[in-house]
Length: 214
Image 1 (cartoon, rainbow, N blue to C red):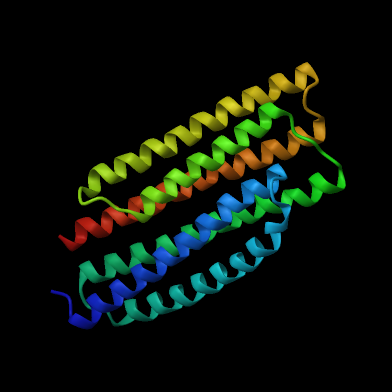
Image 2 (cartoon, rainbow, N blue to C red):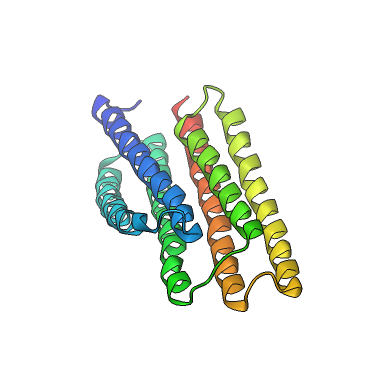
C-alpha cells in the first residue's frame, strides 16, 4: 500500500504535468499561427513559455528522481517512472512547437508565401492538435477507451502527414509552391508527426499509471 505522503506527492506531480500539457498546448496552437503568418507576434510568448516548460521539466524530473530513491514499493516505483517519462515527452512536444514557430524567421527572411492549399492544411493540423490535447487533458473514466481514442488520433496525424507530404510534391510539380517553401513545410510536417508520437507516449504512460493504481 502507498503511504499517504506518496499518494499526495503523485497527485501533486500529476497536477503539475497537467499544467505543463496546458502550456504546451498553447505553444503548439500558437506555433501553427506563427508558421502560417496569422499572428507572428506570438513568437516571443511561445519562446518564453518554452523556457518555463523546460524549467518545469527539469524541476519535476529532479523531484521524481529524489522520490524514487525513497520509494519502497514496486507500484510506487513504476508510477514514478511513468511520470518521469511523461514529463520528458511533454518537453519534447514543446521543443517541436518552438521549431514550428521559429521557421517563421526564415519564412520572413526569404519572403516565402504558402498557397491557399498549404494554408488550409496548416489550419487542419492545428485543429487536430487542439482536439488531441483536449482529450489528453480530460481523461475518461474508461481509461482504455480514452487511450484508444488518443491512439486513433495519433494514427490520423500519421495519415495526414503522409497525405500532406504527397500533396506538397504535387504542388511542387505544378509550380504552386517554391522549393524553399516546400522544404520548410516538410520540416514542419515532421514536427507535426512527432507531436502525435509524443502525445501517444504520454497516453501510454497514463494508461500504465491507471492500471497500476487499480
